[in-house]
Length: 305
Length: 327
Image (cartoon, rainbow over all chains, first blue to last red; front, side, top):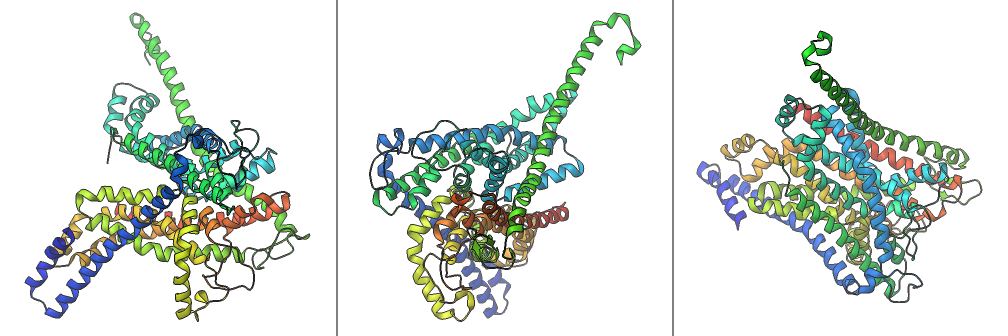
């Protein structure tokens, strides 16, 4: 409705202007064609989202409704056999992500503090540039790098912890950028007021700047975590899939939802395919939940654009 | 300072001040150290990635009996090891470029829709819906592409290659449903939210004065966009495209699940299958059992790293220029 109104209002000056009628018609027509195209572009963008969600929901939901899915592993279950659950993979995904979170959060927040509060000159620009480059590092390259360090050089096993380290590389730039944005939004008056009261710089940052930007920073962390949770390449390279439950990040293979999907992808039998869609749905649910949580936290932000 | 003057009555306070300033200095030093250290870690990480990949690729490249840059072979089991990058590089670049061609016009449309056309109150919810596309894990895109999208694409492929088959990239030679083109279609959807989000941000910054000036001169809405919004946003759009391209080049799992390997004669067609660099590495992850073999894959990964580094650095340079221009 509103498009029609807006095209009308913008084409009105034309008819009043009284240019050659043919030209005006062509301009109005072009304008209307573009309006239609732009609406179409939006629809084209939304259709895949609805289609993907519908596909995964319709094919995977029924397995998620059983209690077994959330409490049992796939131990002793062959691709052709029904039953079992995704508990082992959910545990693996959560554990690896948790360690990623623990390592990357302080590193990212301090890097952002450096860029906003301390960094001046060439080195700060270099750090900022490297964060951009890190944003562009493909997950498979991060995985190969960790393979080269952890397994070839240090002689360790393929294990959950090495995946966490690879995920840190991928999560770090996301959190640095969002934290940086948030710190920049904290008004300078707050910092100056704090200095004027004789509060040292570090205490100003720790007690004034960080709390003010806290909810925005948390949002960034949650969104960054949601992004790395679905990463598959590091898992394929660094953590072989297993059907058993493993709580130990430092020994033995560890399952995760993406590798559970990938392993079942190869099996062209009905129970495996069902499990594949169900684990995809589980992964989407966890990721969407984190996204929603992030957006919810953002509502309580003390600073905003 | 006060201790130097040594005024007797105030002894208690200066010593308190001194203690405070000592802890202040310690606190400031720790904080500066921690944040400076984190900065060093970030820079060090990129350097370490380059160093480790190069160091472990070199022995394999030395042992390579084929020319890495020009030979179209990938046989890491041969006893003098043989591997070359051109095939993988072609599929990587072709799939990403086709994805950009499909994605960028739609993404620009979406960005224009949200900033210029959508009703004000709905602009934000619409933007979050498009952002949700970026939240879907890439393996899910892979499943959707392999199980659902493929079946609709093969007739489109056949149609295009029937009409335009005389152009090498559309030729019917070795045509399969699980093709580079199919991978590009899904990649284009994965990139769309990235390009749309950045373009949206720059379009939003178009000065209102520019837009109103165009409208006051009697421009239609589209003419206003063409003369005010698009020129203003151009550097942003270019860098958004580059960032999207960087993402497409490095995408692993979706491409791995969708595009099939193909045996037989080489073809330039985008309707044939193949391996991207990332897909090749992930597909053969189980074969990393000797340093030499692993080195071959690491050499391929190094090429991918250099490629994405170049693309992202270029995007950054374009954006920096614009910043300098507007400030």
